Image 1: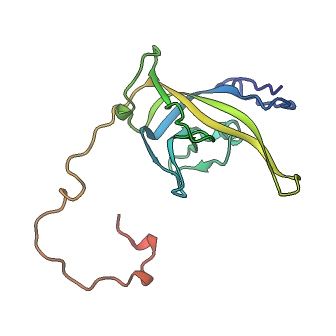
Image 2: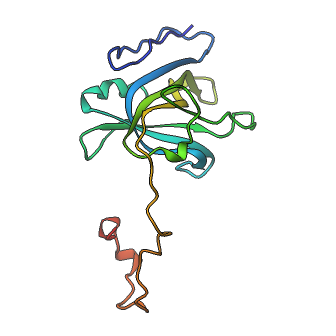
Image 3: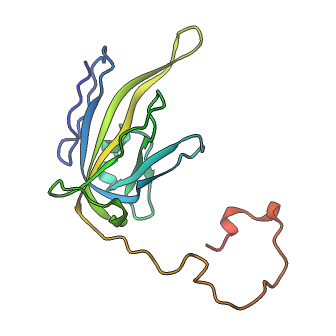
Length: 193
């Protein structure tokens, strides 16, 4: 049976003992900052092969080791480190998965569309050991997957949608001037937005 210690701001231990029964264990990561909360409605995965719910969690750099056990982390411009937690909208058998739950500090349901970047709280994950085997049964990769289960917002920064539909911010100055750029010569860094 796998044993994991709960991960909190003060207890950052993560230990795993042989998981013979492939049981799942839940952990809570406390005192995180939420960014790009996409749990109100599913979004496409990076590969586009499936739909998922997703949230980016940020913590100060001194807590980097705490997040590293759950996957690859990135250093942000603000000096924090981040990791994205996800959950597929369908189970392995094709049936619908339960939505990611979103609650406030008193554990009452919270509309996830109101959560702005920089909101703070806790994240609940389900950890499960996995093994990938080749055709002859040899284990080629093993590890522990972290699946997003719920978020609790304790300090809400309300998301405020900017006016317009994206194109409404442009003025009605008429036609486009200049030559169109050759797409083979344009790099992502050259795009002005």
